[in-house]
Image (cartoon, rainbow, N blue to C red; front, side):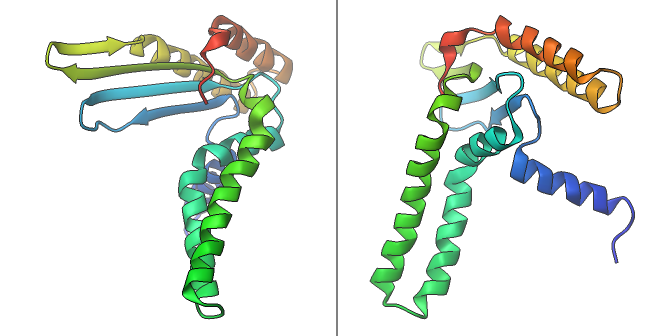
Length: 178
């Protein structure tokens, strides 16, 4: 039996996995690796992007992991029914076709996504900073605040979309890299 507080948390977790955490886009903070000390990327969708479109974009973003899981499961299921090389080929084809299909299905949508990225990298000459991390975080904070206001009923859908559009149009249109 679950506690009353656990059900909404599970529901939100499933929602985040299927739809993404935010209706306006994503904020990704990459962990530090070799020379990159920090990387943060904000992707803002066109206001009014439908749930279906958001789900497709989100699935494309998470496909490297989701596709690997699907391929591994298919490999396990097929391994007992067909020879191992055939099972492995089918699993790899599933993984690759997922990339191909999602790429084709989201081409038009990806062209409308606005993106800001900031990173800092260690070099022999010192720390090199590309982009404005404070701007990326401030823009994301504004979008999160708008989303909370809308969810709490303090903003109408029209006002929410208008403010989201203000943020979206303030971002450079030529920064698409998704």
